[in-house]
Image (tube, rainbow, N blue to C red; front, side):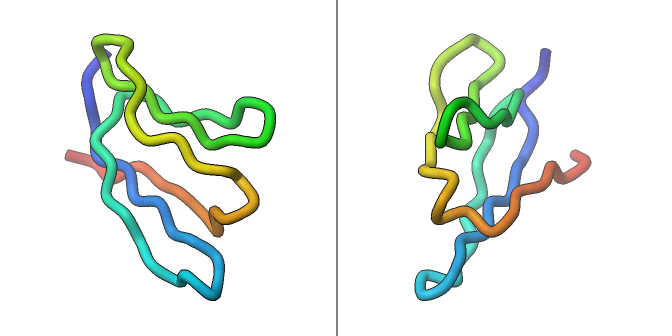
Length: 58
């Protein structure tokens, strides 16, 4: 699996975006979990503050 760019957008009042390099993005319990291709944890966010996330084609 190859690392790709993901864009995470946060709900107000934060209303910002963050670029994350990860191979996978999945919801586990109450978290958006992003993992790198080597299995390391990339950022993990509480799902309650995440508006949306998407993968960008590289």
